Image (cartoon, rainbow over the protein chains, first blue to last red):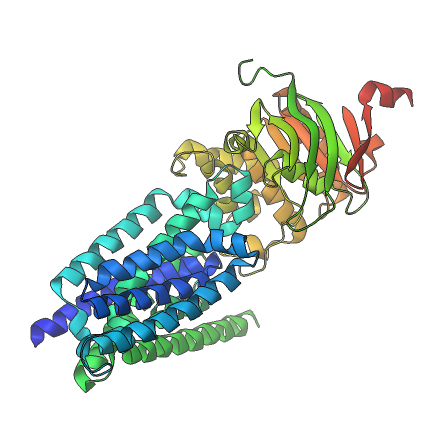
Length: 273
Length: 238
């Protein structure tokens, strides 16, 4: 039991931090809706794996990455904005996820793995899962540290970065693939419907307190980690769905950050007066 | 010819550019030569196609027909190589107050864009500070970019363009928010230094009195066409 609690906290810190960072960057690059369709691609992939009895992470990640790669060409082919293409795929993946879940062997919605898929579970946090999270965190951190100069240029103004010779397309696709990978990993903990709480609520909280991009990314990492570990602890203690508990923890942190930011602003105004 | 030894920094032959879904070309059948080390002023009314011309030259907009060479590189096939040697100051530069980068960081991005990983060494940061100093923005270096005034933001972006030591500098309405005194300083002090170093400057303006600038050629764009090119010598005789 204690081991499960410790591994939950470690998994939460890693997954939450990773989601926080990726969410902050996706939000800045206006990739929010694209991350949305990729998350549901991962959900459909997981459901398909469940129906076929295949490996959940591999199939979820495959579908998320394929989505990242086809979004741009699909939008071009249909002559619609990429956001609209993204939401179209989102609908498709939801439809497929429900079909695959119903097709899963055994009484659908009753089995543990379906529950994990929809609303997350601390039981998903196993040593292999922690190893995957650790590897993904190291990849993301290394890329951010090594390529920060170019990444910051893209985050500031994507068109200007392109005009200066930065291969914006490559960085953007890499970001989408990383987002797909992150969502796939977080999905097992939070469930398909609540994975966005971990992607975007920590980013929103960090924007309350930080004015500098590096600070925003660092704060998103910390808030994401805190949300996930607090949520998993709540889930463990009160036997509630992990995804719901993580979402509530993330929202509590957002409210606290917002209150602190307002208090800080009014104190500063008071000192000026 | 070896790269860098071209006579013309920019060559366009019968270039037409269309915006996505448009049937009417934004640029039509443009043929143009801009010699290395010259200051070219691109003038014309709003919507004439001046910005489209700059973005086509950089390969940001892909031409439907015609041939473009920039600094010896074919555009759009070798656009990234040409862009690495160029700097661009866009027309729509204003950022909101919540912009999470300082002025110094924004200028540093200009250097980061050209290096492999984008990491700056100490010498790079010194260049950044010199560029800020040149534009009189050193006192604002650590302020958030979005909290600077429009004119100050434009000066920071000009510092970013200059710090790259470009071979080709494309400026789209670079003085729209800058006061007259600073404008004179940039035209009288900064531009001549860049031109002496072999940089070619393309400057777009819809309202600039070009007789006040020492331009080598003035290109008038009307309705997507180059309607007139005045060389400096010819201009002097008018």
